[in-house]
Amino acid sequence: MSEAGPAIDPIHQFHINVIAPLSIGGVDASFTNASLFMVIILAVIAFIMLVGTSGEHIVPNRLQTLAEMSYEFVASTVRQTAGEAGMKFFPFVFSVFMFVFFSNLIGLVPYTFTVTSQIIVTFAFAAFIILLVLAYGFYKNGTHFLNLFVPSGVSPILLPFIVLIEIISFASRPISLSVRLFANMLAGHITLKVFGGFVTLLLGAGVYALLAPLPLIGIVLLTAFELLVAFLQAYVFAILTCVYLNDAIHPGH
Amino acid sequence: MAHDVEGHKAGTEVPGGPAHEGGVFPPFDPNNFAAELIWLTITFGAIYLLMSRIALPRVAKIIATRKDKIDSDLAAAAKAQDDAAAAAAAHEKTLDAAKAKAQAMGQAAHADVKAQADARRAALEGELNAKLAAAEAQIATTKTAAMGNVDSIANETAQAILQHITGKPADVSAVAAAIAALKS
Image 1: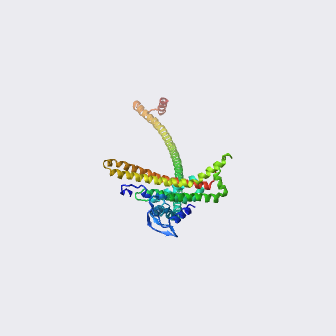
Image 2 (image 1 turned 135 degrees about the vertical axis):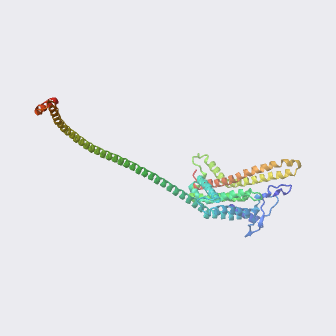
Image 3 (image 1 turned 120 degrees about the vertical axis):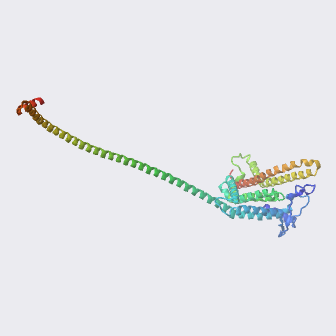
């Protein structure tokens, strides 16, 4: 998209463009390209999970296999990380995983928009997860939940420092969780765009046009790598959600 | 909490709409935050509801149904196998019994036939022996009779020869004595 001019802008792909201006009670709620791709993600997930399973075949077809694989994959992740008690959060973790995964994946298609490259989106997820952990932790364990910050078997002299470290570590979770995903997506897309810019720059530079295929090969390899990152980051996001929820379910160290 | 803070910021700072100032890096532009959060809430809420209410219970049901089906099929297969093994064992047993019976029948028939044959042979032998004895007795009597006849023939022949030679009737008692002396 941005290769049109000689100045290649790798940031252009992250611009929010308003499609339909909308305001609810003085708060901006415009339908933007980000909103559009959120709706597309919703549509894709709904298609796979609802249309795919509508047949309820004993011997699944392709789409149903995909739906079942997603289910089994996330279910086993939740079970292994947060135990059987964590399964009450399975629908939430599943929704988060699917949303992040399809956001990352759809973002790799040229001319699309990557929802997870917006820090506010990833931060909203991370903040919601941490609030959920806090709320459920206190609801389930009461003040016993605070034991999360007090590891057992630490000498009394060190204990204040350890507790401080634990609290800082807990407080930094939403930041690390959101920035990890956001930065991975942002960096990957900027790299792809910069390599794409090299191709056009080299093509317009006389003899150096001979070198143009090199960054093109780079893009191909990077795209394959970004596919891996797209899955891996969604998986990491989901598994960390499970780990944090596990702290809320079993606060003892 | 995050929702409130960010939404408030966007709402107070720029109530109009996401305008793009040149210097701001788009992902960090707070003007976009409110709209993005609202749409994220709508779309993710919809995904969560669809997944938790419809899709995931349906998949769980499919998997449970399949597991039941596989389990029942396996159980049926195991039962069929057991039945087949039992049938094979019963067949084997019947076969063995039939074999044993056939053997016993064969032996019985053999013994029967042998006994009958023995009995018949014994009877036949007895009959033949009796016939032989009778024949021998008859031969003995016939021989005795024949020998008696030979005496009389010899007597008569000797008398005839003597009469012919001497020209007068022979002494009957002398001839008989002579023949008796010859015979002993």
